[in-house]
Length: 76
Length: 111
Image 1: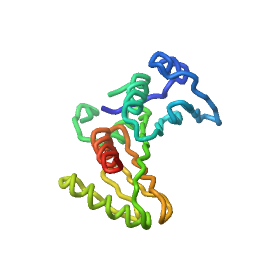
Image 2 (image 1 turned 90 degrees about the horizontal axis):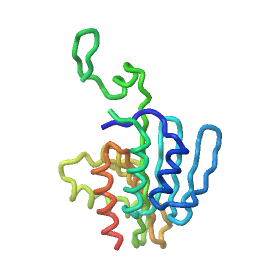
Image 3 (image 1 turned 120 degrees about the vertical axis):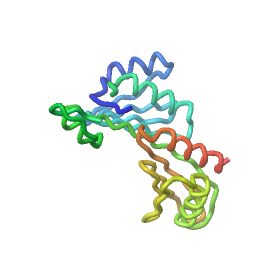
Image 4 (image 1 turned 135 degrees about the vertical axis):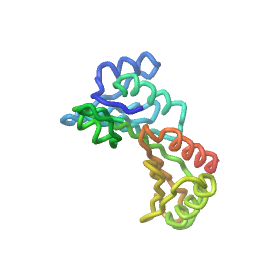
C-alpha cells in the first residue's frame, strides 16, 4: 500500500488526544509543522508530502503513532 | 499495473503517481538505540553490519561511508570512542516489516 495526499494537522491532533497522547507542543515554520510530544520524548515533522516520526526505541509508541498517521492519509 | 489508453503496462510507483496526478506522501520513521560498545563508531558500524547480514542473509545489506542500508532502511552509528553509541535506525513505511525487525534486533542487542 502507498499513502498519498496531505495530512490534516487538526485531525491528527484530535486523534493523538483520543489515543491518550495529550499536551503536544505544536510549532509551525512555513509549511512545516513540528509536533513535540514532550512526555513521550517523540517528534513528528509534517510537510505537505511527507511525515517524519522520530522517537526512542519504544515500539509501542511508534506503532501507535504510525497507526494515527495512516488513519489521516489516503491509500491506494 | 497501470491502464493507459486501453493498454496495460507496468510502471514504477512514482511514475504512476505522476501520471495519475496523485501526490505521494512519504512516511519515514527514525528511532534511536543505545549500545554499550566502546571503540570508534566505525568499528561498531562494522560489527552491526556483520550482525545484520547474519540475521538477514537473503537481503542486500550495503555498507557505505560508515552507514548500513538495506532497501530504505538506514542504520547509522554516532558517539565518541570511549562512550556508549547512539544507533539511528530509519526507514519508510513501505519497509515497515524490515525496519521494525532491524530495530528490534538492535534493541535486543542493546539490552
